[in-house]
Image 1 (tube, rainbow, N blue to C red):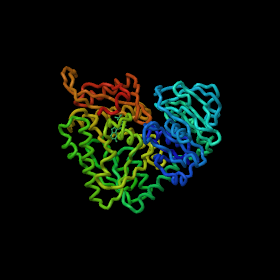
Image 2: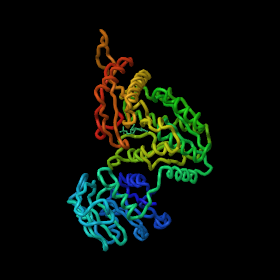
Image 3: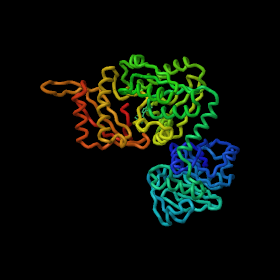
Image 4: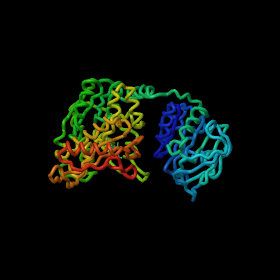
Length: 511
Ligand code: XMP
């Protein structure tokens, strides 16, 4: 097992993800971990992450000394490299020549870190993001690769098996980064690479049991993949100590509420409270147009209703949530400036208010990993493969105010669009597809009649993790067919457009 020390970089979790992909078990711990804990963890190797901090700043984070005394291979990434140098007697200084984004490194000497991967003299594309840089190496180190902005792009101490890289191998923009990490864990540290999602399931079940004991857990089901996988995993771990609460906001798609109840109550026999709160939600949302306001209202009401139902159940000590890693970073801070782009309603709020302890068994995973876990747990593939659906539901797909009439129109259009996507065999190739009902009426002509109805936008994107996305390149024939069907079959829509914005600069949802 590998210990990853987190110094706060936005991409630290990607290191864990890359290791899991190559079959290596790893755990991520904050850099404040004690020497004692490092010893106890007994890692086969240690990786030090990047950080938004600078070494030159006062009180910048340091690694526990034990990291370097443990006698195992250590890889420092970006800030991790700087820490390694600073703590082992080298020097790191702020640099005028900052490097952000794509860069090239030249491999100067052979090194165990990229043995079998890069030859001496190779030029490799990497992704840099740094201001500080190493200016003097600690004893025992040599430079094995350089870039224009980082004369110490890769450094190595072959005796102690300490390596430092100035770039980020964990991001996809470093094309051979994953292999580099695998070289480190497999070849240098001797990990076997046999760890799987089945093992994650067992470990997580053990973790849940240890955390929860005999306590009672409640879990909010949304109908989405994440909360469903979390619920089934918890049920495997603690059986009927778990009760699920499904708050029907009235903002779901056609037939969705019934599907949730059938799957969990009837198929899995998981105790489930189904509360239809649609009138309440639609009542409070009436006349509200501001997107953040909508999200706040929905989030707030959701908490109220959930709280009410939880009290009826009584005695709960824990709250389980299907929070994923991208939820955590997107809602904490995007772009490093601590700015909230959108307040995701499934993160935060509930636990504080309810005075419950949190269980978040999926917190370290990305969407595709959750799907693999769902598969392990025997959830139907048709369910696992479903596109993500946001907590605030159709409310954020109706810019402007929400009315029952608009919801009905949107549901019909969305249903037709998705039916056509499934018929064309494209559903699985798309990350997320949905219709958006625009607050715009346009003039049309149907038969001999003038119409004045809503316009609708279709959205479909490809993505790996929802953090970046590209629009899906449907052929025009397909788009034409969907548009014709929607206009013919849905009263209230007389114009259809296709959204070709990628993320960034757009977001996937319209609000
Ligand atoms: P955006 O629109 O921010 O969406 O590009 C990224 C992914 O997150 C989903 N999303 C949400 N999911 N609660 C959720 O559970 C929310 O409030 C929320 N807002 C956006 C969105 O559907 C996409 O998959």
